[in-house]
Image 1 (cartoon, rainbow, N blue to C red):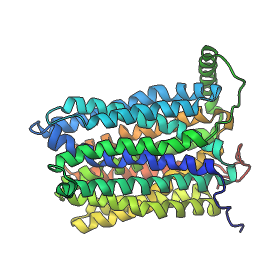
Image 2: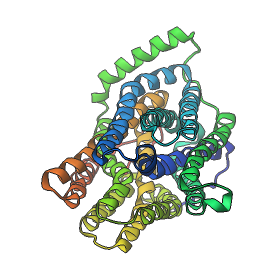
Image 3: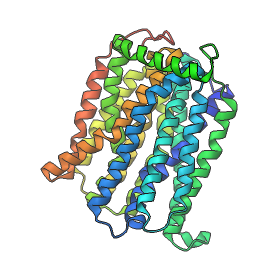
Image 4: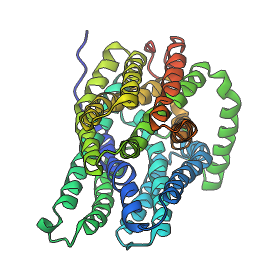
Length: 427
């Protein structure tokens, strides 16, 4: 077996560093401090059920905005070679809203939710065009490795900043801060600045390939919508793409629901919130080497087989989570999730890149991200409603087996085919 070539190109590393940049938002804000700070600081005194509903609605609203905009923006970006511009716009929106969270004081929970929705929309929108730029920075033979590098750096970068922010909140006096709330607010400021600083390498060193002749903006927009309509008509004919998207829609719902609901599930079982945050931090650092390992596994063994291995592991994790009773088990599960989470995400991105036409990358990644963002709607609702109907959060988390099992079955049925972009068997 030929050894994979080392990273040789500055654009590959610059592209991967954007994962280092934006994962700080995913870790510090989305999964970490915002849900806890909303309840304990901005909305202190409000009924708990009201805050849970408000946070769920905010996540759903942000996802629905992306669902509505992503395919059209992707089609326009492909026609005009605007992926970098749209990425920069989305990132700027998210960064500005994240920085603004620092300015809010106790009681301003409605404003906090508005900024959270804005920041999340910007973060998700930028990710669409970031994913699509994978086809511009490297050759098809390197998709698995470079995609995995991005996720690995994301785990490491997000984990390092999150660790620093956790230390700020645990020992605020060491840093001249009045109390833990002041430290959390400063964490939002640091997250925005981190996201901004590490986005600059991509904006400077990644060159987008123009696959269509230059047009005026109005003509580009018209061509983009025409391309979108044509793609919607022809998508059903892209059997492998359509089949993969259905599988991805199911299993990535399970993956993202674990990310978003783990802390809430742990608190529902009575575990200490400080320990839950530390477990989330542990997941980040385990995920760094694990994502790199999965990238090599995907290159050697096949991306589809690697994803199926990860989904089998998620099935075991779900069964264990449904019966865990001790705090140490939550830490063990955090390690297990870290071992497979980034690998499943990275190999899914690289497998999809092999299935799609390169000249419609942003548009097709728009559909890809749209389905992924339904995880903020379908998965948490499934867990919540099953838990409510049966009166048990354990049965709620167990319902994720439907998503992992259904996605794995569809992926298993994906027929072997020649990649239109790389000519390799899609194993």
